[in-house]
Length: 79
Image 1 (cartoon, rainbow, N blue to C red):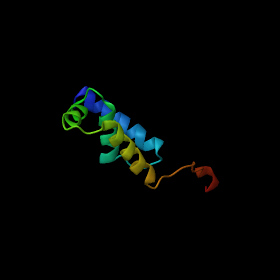
Image 2: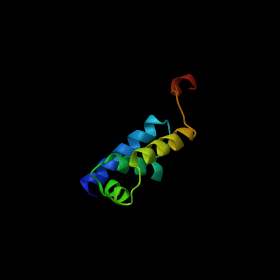
Image 3: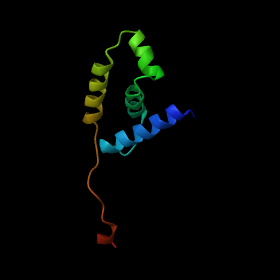
């Protein structure tokens, strides 16, 4: 994997965690790739006249609608 893609995977995992999602999936990776302003995806979308800021906002809203988990499980309480 390229360094840029490795960074995107790491960022996607962090974003999934921030949203409280137990899994990272394509939307998280898309979010991460959109953060790379000089990346291939941003360049292609700009050439297609896509409003990247609006796209990011919509993606954030969609990710925010997903089920999430929070809190901590205290194993010692059960054993």
